[in-house]
Length: 223
Image 1 (cartoon, rainbow, N blue to C red):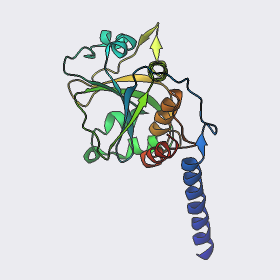
Image 2: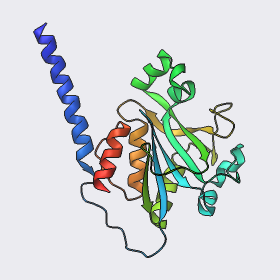
Image 3: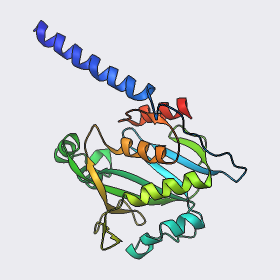
């Protein structure tokens, strides 16, 4: 009995150390040097839930041009009231089969804890109020925002150069799901993808951020 308790405490201690190190060890270790510019900055938002994060980028003309490949998939990229393009990456089974906590099922949870194929969830939003606890904002230069758009665009699976929508998949009338590159698991999941996307734009995150709370904290410390 005592041996089991000791092992449990060791495992818990290891997980705590990994979580702490993943949050407070910066990635990259040395802050990237961005060329100074007097050009206008662009607001980018990190949207956080209890276990998941999304990225919201301003839906300006350049963003519409960069994601014009979505217009041919029945996604309403030109919606007149849209101000933000919202993108998240995650496990296929959990993402598609769990639109709300009330619909949680054992099999998607099992796949999320092991290995699952990945998908991208794409949505639109109008005005997003700031500040609020679930929203963190960052200002990026035009070059940084372009790198972020490219990272997101490159995460889509393409067949013969065309992205692959998942038929009849979505939470509402506007949002859509698409096949994505990579495989999902609990250690390298949606929040580590979000962190990698933000690093592509020159922001610093923790070394390993599997949870929204860890990612938000590390972003606040290093940016």
